[in-house]
Length: 160
Image 1 (cartoon, rainbow, N blue to C red):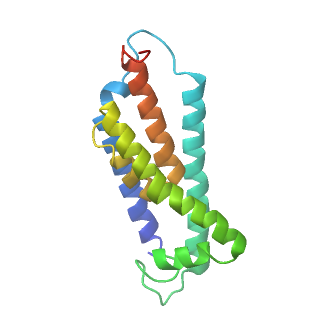
Image 2 (image 1 turned 180 degrees about the vertical axis):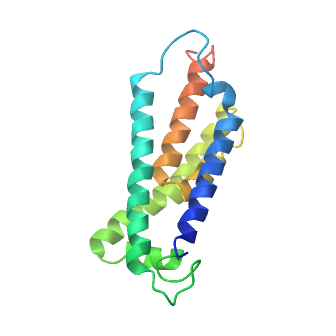
């Protein structure tokens, strides 16, 4: 029962990712010109999948290690954002990496995906940021890059 917070995150991550793909379904359909997915997009998808798998591995380990039988399944140790963030900033090296990750995820990703997505005409570009909160920062960031690249490649005026 103490893995409930991870299950909720998984459901929300899958739902938001599905929403993004649905909103951009025309970009993700089979390419009518018969071209295959390029090497860069394959690398992006590989990184995306790896980021989620590694993140889930470490998050499950976090919950298993820090959850106690007397803590609440939704906001107790091993399940709460406050406890997670407290451990993220546990020493100077972790502080450095964590502030970098945090600024990238909660400042740069929304600015880039929302402003760039609006300029490109992507529907609901704020979803990439929301997705990153339930999947991983890398997943939201790279899903935006894949979608934006597909949009650019499908636009006949891209060279101008």
